[in-house]
Image (cartoon, rainbow, N blue to C red; front, side, top):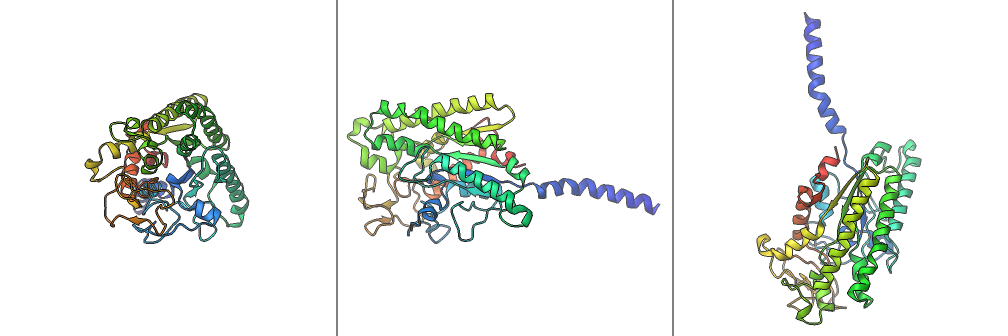
Length: 359
């Protein structure tokens, strides 16, 4: 009789605990590629630059290399996935690569610019990281990310904003700027295919945001009110972003057709961010087209060579609900909303939640 009871309780424990064991063992690993929108310290580490206060004043209470007053949207995503914030690949002091790596660098584009970390270089850095991890793992050193974890990881791409802005900064016409996009999309395609051919099975691609609504763009590029849309954003810049995103949508479709064994999810970051400007009162934001940290006051509080972090710039009071932090990047308050919409899957095609890709 005791043997029967012992067998019963053993079976019951296995039924109850086995799913829990699987849950505990499951691990979300995230590798991210991109620009300043998701750079958690790459530019400052890679070039030895110092990004001083008031950057980082919210949440961190110190500078962290993020172009923000606090957390970026990718930080909130990590919180939502219950993983550590991603250390940057280029950070030499105390990085933690347990839950993945961030390769994004501020100023990066799909091609080489003044910042020497284009998308192709970021992918090569990942491949080096993966090979080095394999080499060190048997010695119990390095990140200890396993082969299955590399295979099951999510590989996210958020790049393209700088490709668009560079064209306009070089005084190209709208049509000339748009004509550069196929090459940019081709470079994104090559980067994604490189990840897939090296074992990646879960691809997460963000399109680019409404560049024409950024205070920097408006302050430096607006000629007259006829160039603005009904929100007061530069129409050509936003139209260019939408043209870029249309090509990116086609790329996502083509990649799904080419790799039917790979999950490819594309996120409409443009819609998410444009909503912050169009419906700012809904989120409690004031003056959505004005930088929180800058110089010059209304309407944009942005002046070249007097930007956030310089002695001539000042920041709005802590607690102010602003969309733009420094005229180029979003505030922590905006990033939190952006991340919540990303995690909801309402802006994803197909509508797969990021959390589901981690299980």
